[in-house]
Length: 236
Ligand code: UDP
Image (cartoon, rainbow, N blue to C red; front, top):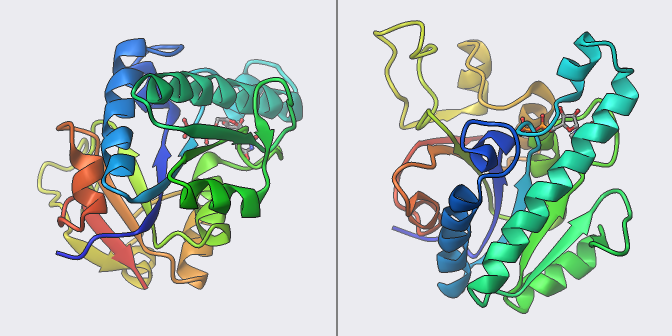
């Protein structure tokens, strides 16, 4: 079992909301405990949070809000998740920095990749917020891009309600089975959706492995970081 030294964890907004709109502090506190255990094990960890528990641009567009403006609303929602996570981490005595792709000097640092690496080297957890700062992107893509830029060894995709990549959608097909591992090429050929298409392409082209795993039970983030085979490993 070989562990990782530097990881990028992607948590979708759903994880923060505990199934409803907004932030569920109990849920965020539990996530913070897990991330703290990773940092305290001496592993460098950066986090990309989603924002689907507040707004998704595409959904707001369907209800009449201009897509670009709706996407900016989505990105601002993401920052609230980052601040909640930062708060609970700091309460656990973990030093953190939030870096946002849209500058907002009063609440966070701007995204400066070399500084992010430096923070991680000092044992700080870096939380990347506001997505890519650009409409029409998703936070899966941000996770892939940030992982590449900060030279993480793996993207950890922590999921709610699903514990890996299945041969088919397990909610629709009861015969679907979970895959231990697969290549990016396999996923493409079998039409399996691992992440959004842009994120998938970035990881495939740049040989950045991904581990898709369930957030239940508590402790799974540390297990994945320490090299325990949980979820599904997708690699080149
Ligand atoms: N978003 C964006 N650009 C980005 C990242 C996110 O415009 O680089 C917006 C987009 O509207 C998206 C919302 O922010 O729907 C929330 O992000 P995402 O849907 O990726 O969150 P998740 O599904 O992971 O909770």
